Length: 120
Image 1 (cartoon, rainbow, N blue to C red):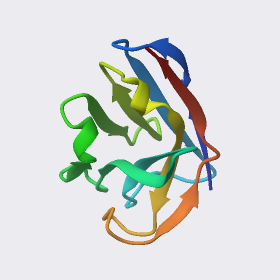
Image 2: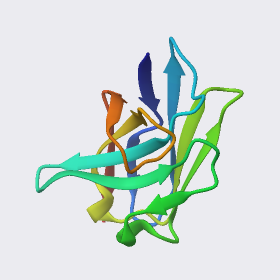
Image 3: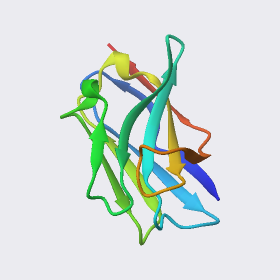
Image 4: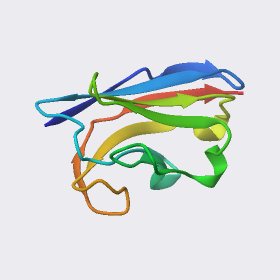
């Protein structure tokens, strides 16, 4: 199974971006999914997670109300809609697939990441 992220780029503060994670060699199936990010100042941190059936979603406090995670099992994709971006959102964003249907367990597969740069 491979995860490939797309949609990153450079934007000004206040603008929006949508990241997409495409699964190949497998299916979303029973797996929970999540987005993480890392920059030069922080370790990799959890941004948003979604359970296998979409009934449970969680966000990092600083992105609540601005970011939205969603999954499309038919397309085998997981998206992260990011609105009202701030310079502190600048990071490499990576997609992750969990072994189980919950995003509280161990991670099985990581994507390589996509850069998001927000200028003030």
